[in-house]
Amino acid sequence: MSPLSRRSFLAAALASTSVLAMPAHATGIPAFSRDTVTALARELATRTYTPRAKVPQDWLDISYQDYQTRWFRNSDALWAGTPSSYNVDFFLPGLYFPRAVQINTVDNNTSELVPFDLSLFDKTDKAPDLSEKGNLGYSGLRLRTELNQPGLKNEFCVFQGASYFRAIGLANTYGLSARGLALKTGDPMGEEFPEFIEFWLETPAPGQRNIVLHALMDSPSVSGAYRFDILPGENCTMDVEATLFARNELTHVGLGPLTSMFLFDQTNRNHFDDFRPAVHDSEGLLIHNGNGEVLWRQLANPKHLQISSFVDENPHGFGLMQRSRKFSDFADLEANYHKRPCLWVEPKGNWGQGAVTLVEIPADQEIYDNIVAYWRPREAYAAGAQVDLSYRLHWGHEPDLHLPRVINTAAGARVFGTPGRIVTLDFANHPLLDGNPDEFDLLISSPHVDTSKGVLQRNPETGGLRLAFSFEPEEKTLVELRAQLRKNGAAASEVWLYRWTT
Image (cartoon, rainbow, N blue to C red; front, top):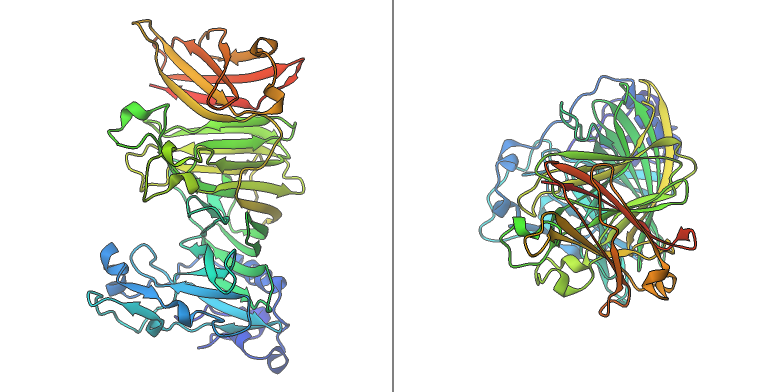
């Protein structure tokens, strides 16, 4: 793939190889740094957006089965056979990945292009013949390092497709994804998907635990420079620094966006003819808002698109959680949904006024990512604006926010012909829940219906408490519900939120 054109500040015209591949002292170009990517993004934003060329048509026409007939050979990974603490694998373009990205390495503050090489991929005898000329290049990359097996470099992070990336902690299998930026999610005119168009990988030293990756982003409305400082382990943490340059006014922007899948659980199990008790990558949105309140919003798979906004100022964090951790919660030997990671966004600095926004899209199969969560600033970003932000991503365990958690939500019709719905919430065993259930105040409310007072009992299987209450929706098609346990005037649980729809 021809590299991106280098900008005037680099004092270089279009070239067949990356100008940054030459020694800095030989070109007069400053040594590579985060500022290099920021300058590229700033200059991009002054131009009219031009989509990058797609890979040749025969690559675009391959089937999913064709795409699976070729795979990267790990023994030829970037930095394989060197003392570097990381190896990097690459992915082919085509199918869902119509445009290739440029990948560079950085060593001694000098950047060098990684050329596309189809011979690095093994294939089966069913692999179709494909052209090897044109706008070819890799579609993404996979990071591998020693995790819990000395001498073996295992994968834990992938960047591939638009601005999507995903990672796992030690106990996880891949599940939900993050994105560099979300634009116009759920808008009637359609969503805009910014793309990472170029990567720079800083060469790790022997024994180095973290790895630093830079990314250049572009889209019709905005360009951006990203720096990811990635540390794998029990949790995989990523420190993200981003600088955005708005080409147009950004009226609906999503910061720290997360994308996941929720098909069904015990709240809507009756809608699916499936042998499994639940199917989801994430089951709830967790928010630690600027007032210190902890909110748990149970996810739903609605019949119609629904968008929920949790207005806040300077949030402490938000994320999509997978709390069901037993195989029996899903009974799926292949998908292993009980091993999917949680993903927590921890803002750095003040993010101001806005709302944690949850988008729930109807889905009838588990292959669709139908859940999106992000921070939406209250004020639009003006055309020409520069936006600097930083945050930390935690992939793996759920954060400990020091309050009893809702570990299961179930709902169904009331029994014995009584009209209405019954809801049960199971709270995890926690020191704050010790004592007689009668000592707790039950705060159950809805702006749409009357609810019963609720019954709180000890659950002998979990050791925690179960809250049960009922409501009668009558002719209403949407009912918002809220519940919390309190004791002596203080919170004794997180706040449970749920949107019931017909």
